[in-house]
Length: 77
Image (cartoon, rainbow, N blue to C red; front, side, top):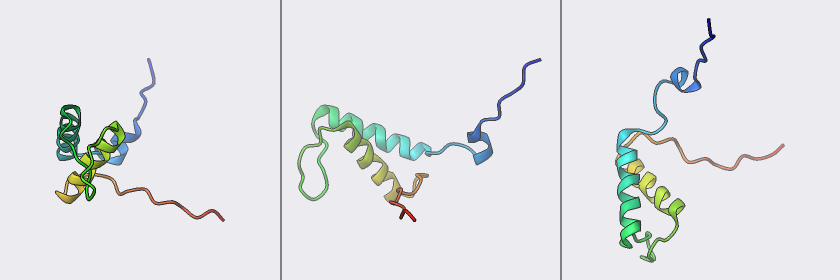
């Protein structure tokens, strides 16, 4: 009889990112691939995959999607 692993996700209470966040990131990635995704104030074309994901998550936060808080730098003691 094999022992079951209890995943940390199930103890946490579901998914880390909500469905709305996934849709926003997916849309941002498609726009980036088509060359139509622009960054905030400067309006320059986004070429980085990481930047496209960040833009999608930021839009999901503004639309009240389930997205974890941005990580802040912690002070070392």
